[in-house]
Length: 214
Image 1 (spheres, rainbow, N blue to C red):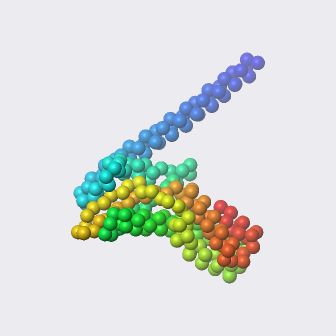
Image 2: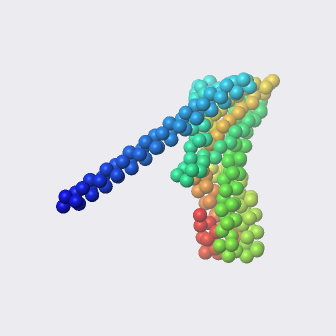
Image 3: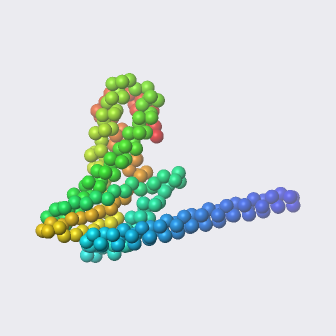
């Protein structure tokens, strides 16, 4: 009985030690990310101010905006992969609203393009597995290649982490930094591409299951 009690006590010590270590590691990781983000934010803010950019009235100070962006930029998932896809775009127009809309549209397209490339690579690996014939494989490749604009539309409304402007003659240039959660983006793209494949090809459901099984 005494031996059993001792074993249980040791097990509890190891269990709580493991939890404590994991919590400490997670805390240290967040602290490290925060420190790196702050350093990069100061550097970026200084550079953009030197280039003549300003924050919009009512927005966070430039350094704080960049700190928010870089925290996401450094964040990784459980596999050590980037958790967010990022894009930096700028656009010039006669009004602030037009310039911002154009810059955001290009940023969304770039993010959609990155997601599309990731999905295309996963599908390419599954084509042989799904036992597609040459014609079906060609249809899949064509459908995936044409999906970037549709994925961009399905991403929904995206908000910039950093939004700056500067005057260029009578026009205004808006510079935005945008981030989007990788997991969410891949899930949206997967559903979008699958629906397109179902609508535009005659591939059997059984083969689609194998093709999209990731």
